[in-house]
Image (cartoon, rainbow, N blue to C red; front, side, top):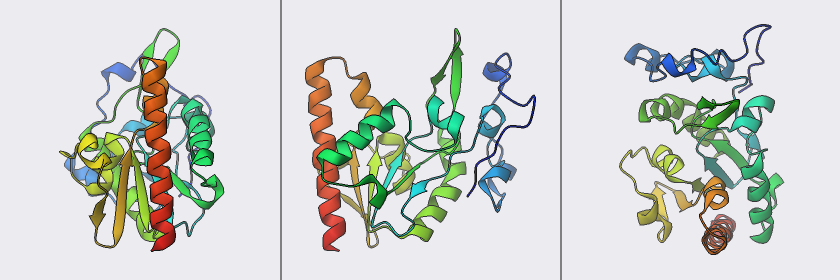
Length: 222
């Protein structure tokens, strides 16, 4: 999968963003594009600078799935390179996991945002957008063949499990299974960054470290 660089004059039309629908139609969901650049299964591509495919080891036993690219990721076309990515790198190191040995991706491959002043702020993807991008996530799972997936946040968990009713808290204590694949759930690093107090941040960060350490151990033993 490759990312799409914007053509001249094609960069964000912020005046029309709030008026667009990004759900897509049933016909859109029937598309089977050969490249991420060509994907029109939903309409998030219209306001994105780049599509953001996964990155990392193509034979990783451990895959990390987040929600969607953020502003920094959208601008460069790579996953987890912004503030959440910096925290993820630190937490992986604390857990004894080298980032170069894992595969990192997102449930949704384009940045969904809304304009606040001059800033593009994250907007949670809708279920239809998650369903549209399941086409790409399932391909990544089939190509990489990880033994363990870490779902970073509720959107990622629902995407990996194909269960829109899955609750993050209910899965954080007990890994789920999809056939031979083990799914470990934990917080998204953005949740840690946004926590309301230093105590809450430290608690969420510790839970992330524990989950990644556990996932790494499971992957090594399978």
